[in-house]
Image 1 (tube, helix red, strand yellow):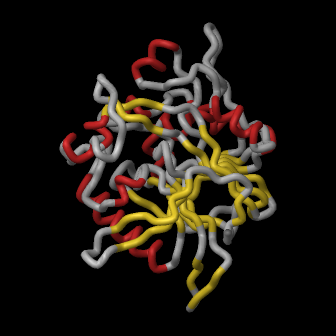
Image 2 (tube, rainbow, N blue to C red; image 1 turned 90 degrees about the vertical axis):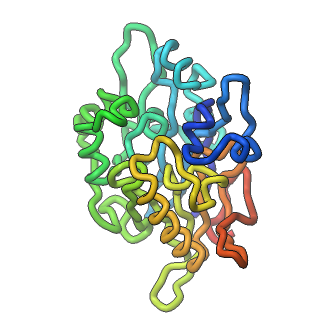
Length: 296
């Protein structure tokens, strides 16, 4: 099996919102900031093939579904569907994808499911041959959003996914589509039922899987958020997220599971480390993956 990091459309978002509880004097050391207080963010997907005999895409980024006014409001930098170009550069098309795994349905993670905006056209679902995986709690949240994050969802998307006939609601460690090749962890601090997909590694020690890769989604958007106290203003429950993140990182460190970041503009994959004071960090940071073997 090989892994590719697949870039989608990039964003610029307010740094204060992205680093919620951290002062600017701290976070501006970690991220470049523009005159509007915005930082650069990637919307990166992970492609794995063959995985359980299938070509699997973990998330789709923000895509290009926004009309121009909203594209500007949400800081989307490119008007075209970058994810499709990145897939093509890796030797794939959206028609080649057998499974799309969605950590949750906020637009910056699921917007790439839709075709690029065209004036007068209704939203249209891409990936015509894919099964779509989403957790039960995330599905419920998207169907009936809370006022706090209603604007983060694409109102038309749940009906499009359901109408496809290729939706699998996941409510446990494993899915029907991917079997034991992908293990799911869950987090509620950012949004209910955030689904963190771990590609199971090739090593087995004392009955546990070692050496895999986990898609960190918005539990850990990038390297700065590996520091446990750092949360986002977008998180629904910061204290819960901190507790979940600590437990998550302890587990991945113990089992040598590498972290895959969706929003870090400079790093796709890294290994967890912890210093003598107990602070988590990363080593062996990797900017891009090009047909990388899982055990590489």
